Amino acid sequence: MSKRARHVIASPSGRWSVRLTGASRASKTFDSQAAAVKYAKESAKKDGTELYVHRRDGTVRNKDSYGASIDTARDRR
Image 1 (cartoon, rainbow, N blue to C red):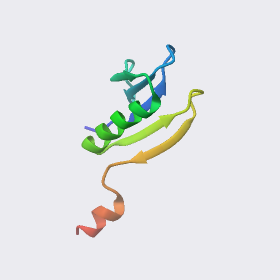
Image 2 (tube, rainbow, N blue to C red):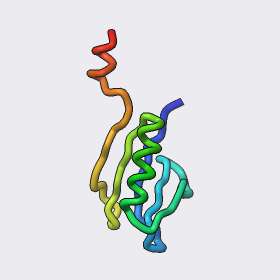
Image 3 (cartoon, rainbow, N blue to C red):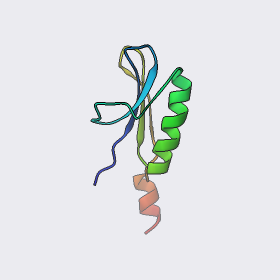
């Protein structure tokens, strides 16, 4: 099973939502983007997935990856 990334996006109500890739509903909604990013970052680290933080206009502001990198996997051999 492939892991789905987390996205922090602006909701129509003016709040910030955390969603999994492909999900139609938010996992959780917050009053501030900072609170949403904190929650999403903890979840992404726990699951080893990517995190995309979007601006209010929908463009990606920041992307972080918390999975095992290729170099790390190569070093374990």
